[in-house]
Every structure is written in C-alpha cells, then in structure tokens.
Image 1 (cartoon, rainbow, N blue to C red):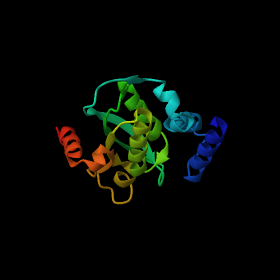
Image 2: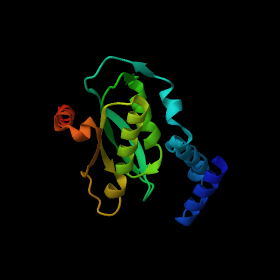
Image 3: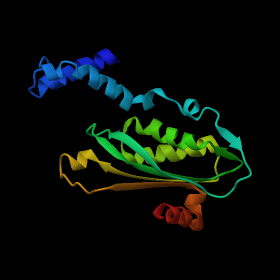
Length: 184
C-alpha cells in the first residue's frame, strides 16, 4: 500500500506542475502516503477489535450521553477533510459500553472516505449492535473543507446530521431529552 500511495502522490505533484525532485518535495510522497494510511485506518479495523469486549452487564436504564467527541474525516467526493464532533446517547438494555469505546467507534468510521450522513448512521448502528440498546441517538456536526476551501468558499458553514433509532425515534420525550442535553 505504501509504495502505491508514494507513486501516486509523486504523480499528483508532477500533474499540478511541480517538480517532485525539488528539495522541499523529495520526501513529500512518502510523508503523504504515511498520512493517508493513518487517515484511512478505519478500513483496516473492525467493530469487534475496537470494542474489545468492553460491554458490561448493568441495571442502568436511563439515558447515557457522551458528548463532543471530536472527529476528523474525509469526504468521498473531493477527498478533503471535514472536522467536527459527535454526540452519542443510548438507553441501555442490560448492557453498557466502556466510555472510550464510543470515541473508538467514531474514529473507526470517520477514518474512511464517506459523507457525513453515512458516518452518522454507521455510528448509531454500531452502538446499537454492540450494546443491544433500547434506543440510540447520534448527532454529528462538522465543517467541510470542500465547502470552505473551494466551490462556494463559505467559512462559517456547519452541517448537522442526526440518526435516531429505537426509543429515540418512537418516543418524542426521549428524543427531546437528548436534544435538550446536547444543546446545554
């Protein structure tokens, strides 16, 4: 993978009119390849690996909210970054998930090429799958470089997406509690 990426970055540098042999660019293909490998590591991870059996029995049945989980992803349309945060809530159904695993789930899916709408859905379904929760709510808010650096160049634009599963979809009180907690 590294060699293919290095070769491709060298071609890109040439294609934009630069000299890949210029001193400042000599190691750029190698550095860019390593960066891309890191930025897409989600393709080489599985939900089972990252949750690592950190699901525990619990009598808790009130909403659990993990808020402001930062995320970095790349849009599949322009391969430019989008940066933001995720808020995840769930209603346990006899099981709770270790706190750090929420961030790991976000990172695993964020480190793939995709659109924000899909990322939000993937996070929600993963939490539901791992915990068997009665309901899951996820909100992702992000700023997209493809809208800020090119095209319409709107610097203050922000996109919010949400997915509500189970109780969060069917019970307006649960959904409203989640939305109110995220606003605070």
